[in-house]
Image (cartoon, rainbow, N blue to C red; front, side, top):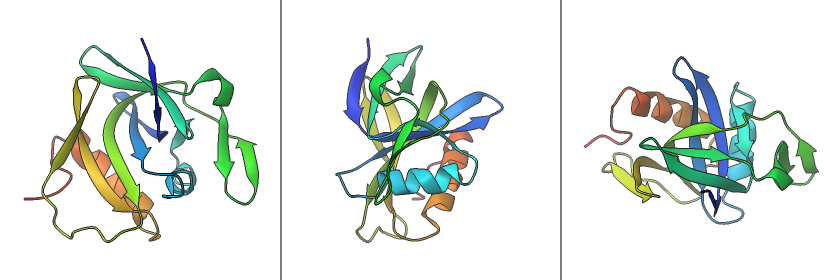
Length: 149
């Protein structure tokens, strides 16, 4: 059974398959903008604005609701078609905002549908934000904390 959540989801193809990050935060936090930057670096859209998520096999999975599949909102331009990954295993939650983030925060997790995932708090405004997501996903998949102690 899937449940919708307010988040944008993008995925990167890895040797183990599509691995995704959920970009969460309030409207205007920069989720779609960050997704566009990641797509420009080779990532693939899973869902923009809302995702259907569910737990299966000890993992959290995401896909786009049918009515918004393959579309992304580009602020100031409109809703445009975008190639998508049909579903992906979620490995990381990125909490998008525009506030100052601690330099060395303590590792944090969030539990969705019984699955505990690492969380990265991120100011989406700097140009490096998409690179930080890439580094955090790689660290997470390697079993490292996304924020050092």
